[in-house]
View 1 (cartoon, rainbow, N blue to C red):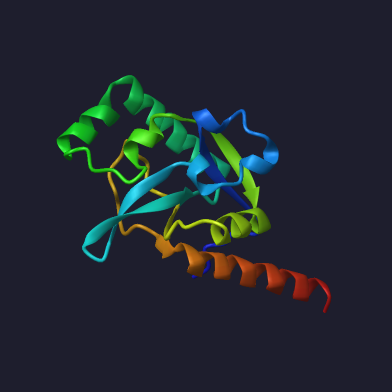
View 2: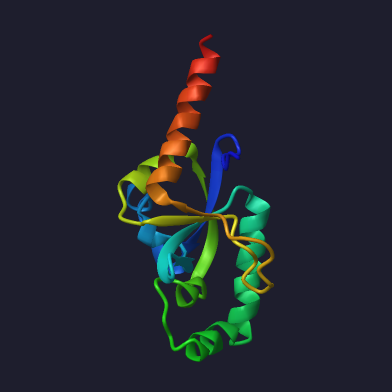
Length: 155
């Protein structure tokens, strides 16, 4: 099953990064990551959304939790073990759209190991399995999709 939607993806940009110049904004650590279960441990994963609507819904959920103190409370209850996760989500402010080539470049230039595609709402239950992919594998999938698109336009 392909995880590509054509050409666009959405990320949640951290508030502290909003004033960076355009060429400085394409670093993974400027965007919301979360902690995901991987091989019996936890790892950081970049949150990648395939629709603006789901990214905006996540942002609204984070704002509701932050307003009620739910994020900090959950951090304390879990022993505060986060890998760029829930605590960073509270500082998120803006939905940013990226084209496939921009996301591929960002992933290839980063050391992020995983992506979480269309994460479940932070303020809701997790239904079904998480769509966790290795970041290099996801970047290869996107690059392959780009090549197929270019090839099909010239045939």
